Length: 447
View 1 (cartoon, one colour):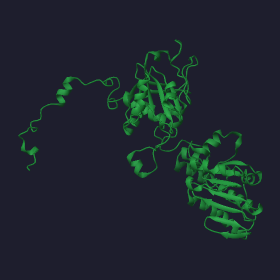
View 2 (spheres, one colour):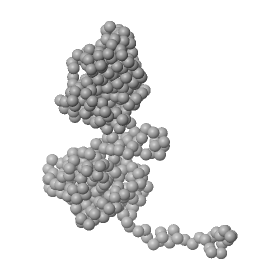
View 3 (cartoon, one colour):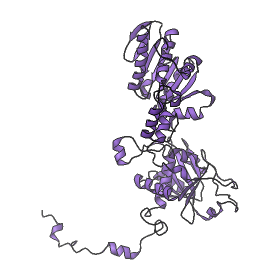
View 4 (cartoon, one colour):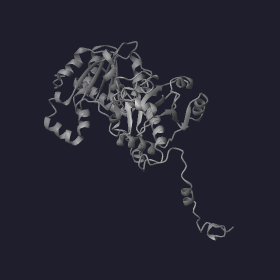
C-alpha cells in the first residue's frame, strides 16, 4: 500500500496481516474497506500460485467496481504475471484467477476450491446467494471476508455480526476512527441524514429500517409478572402466562377475558399463530405464540390452545375446516391489507395492544423488519414488502375482525362482531326510491 502511495490505517494493517479465516468488516462509508480487500485479493493471487479469488456483491455492477479497483492496483504495480484480462476476470501466469460474479444464486454455482471469497456490500446481499457461495470453501478451506456498511437488523451479515459467535473475527470502523473524514463534514451529515441514518451510515449501528410498517411496535411490550405460572409452549414461542396465573399476579383479571388468537397458514413459509385475551377495557393482551416451518397441520394443532376463538388466514379454507373437525373454534379472518394495517396501527397508537415480554419473540422480530417497498409504484399503492410478515399477518387477521366497524367510531359504542343492525336501520336503507319503477322508460333500452 505504501508503494502505491497509500498509508494504511491500523485496522487495514490487521486485515492484511492477521489472516482471519472468517472476517466481518463493519465499516462506515468511505472507510477504505474496498481498497484493503482489493489489495488483499491481489496479493493472494500474485504470491500464492493457483489461488482462486471470487468477488461477489449485490449486483454485477458493484462486484465489477471492486474488480476494477483490483485491476487498477495490478496495472500500477506493473501488471506482474499477467496472462489474460477481461472485464470480469484476471488470469495470471501462476494459474491464479480473480473473478467478479453477478448476484444471481441460480447462475453463480459451479466454482470450487475457492481460496478467498470476498462479499462486498454484504448487508444488502440476499441470504440465498450467501448460502450458495459458502460451500465453495468446503474443500479448499478458503477464507471468507464480508464487508459492508450496516443496513438494518436483517440478513446474514447482521445475524453473523450479532449472533455468529466465535466463528467470526469482527472489525468495526466508525467514522470517528477515519482521519480522512473531518468532524465538520460529519456534523453536516448528521443534520442532513437525521440521527438514525447517521448512526447507520457513519456509526456502524444496525438501525431499524426506514419505512417500517409498525415503527412503534416495541412500545406495546410490557414486562411479564415474576409470579406467573407456566403454561403451554409452542416451537419458537413462549409459554402462555394466562393459563396458570395466580390470583396475586397482575394478569389474574385477564383470566376472565375473552380468549382470542390469529393464524397464518404456511408450510415452506412458517405457520404462525399468536393468542391472548381481550379484557373488559378492550385491551388485547398477547401472551402466546407458535411459529414453525415444514410441519403438518396435526403438529400445529398439538401446540395450539383449544379455549381460543381463532381468526385464521382466509385463503386456508381446507386448514380451517380441518381445525374445526379437530375441535377448534376457527373463523375466517379479514385479508384486506391496508385496513388491517390501519386497525393494528390504531391499537398501537391508543395503547390497546400489549405484548408480554419474552412471550412472542417472532412477532417482535418481524415487527422490526416488516417495511414498505422502496419501489415507487409499490410506495404509491402502500404495499409492504411480502416478507417478515407471518406472525404479523396472524395479528392482522385477529385485530381486523375484533375491530370490524370500529375504526371510525368510539371503542365501546360499536356493535359486537356479527351483531345485526336494528330493523330501523334496514328500513332506512330500504326506503322506496320513486324512480325505480318498471314503467320508468329511462331504465330500459329499446331493441
